[in-house]
Length: 190
Image (cartoon, rainbow, N blue to C red; front, side, top):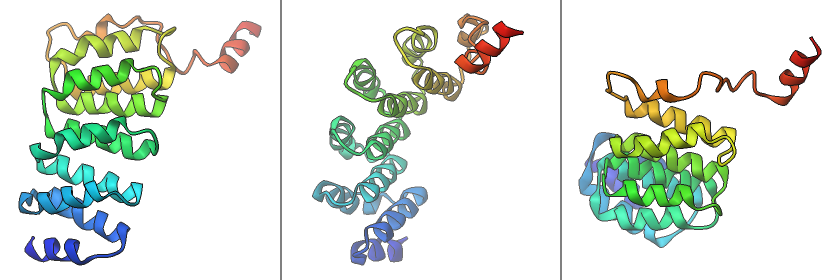
């Protein structure tokens, strides 16, 4: 781990730095976390910063939470924002739940960002997010299908332990395949 940490600090290539950071994150080598955070805050290539966020999330490095929340708010690269939201989820920070719920409600966010934020909620594993996620799955007029699908996945990530699953409360006719316009037209012709 020390050699990887040294390699991370010495690497100039952003892709290489991102790879070293992910390796350190998987290993849980949080001694490297301050250097990874410092590199993240310097800016640089979005894909590298995305990997740095995930690495910090894997390490559960709480000192990076505020900075990663700021990255989720940044206007710009969707993959970076997605990975930042997932990093918050990986940290399991219950305090991030309210923050991520607000990001979902922000209509300025794209479907991809909303999907990423929803995934982050699922990774956190806090049951207080269940009602928000169920609403997203049910509300066809308010949320697009892709966002609703991400919400369904997040419910699965939460692993609802209720004796009557929250997924049971979702209407039976929420079949994403049959609800496409083309198939709907074919079925009306038949």
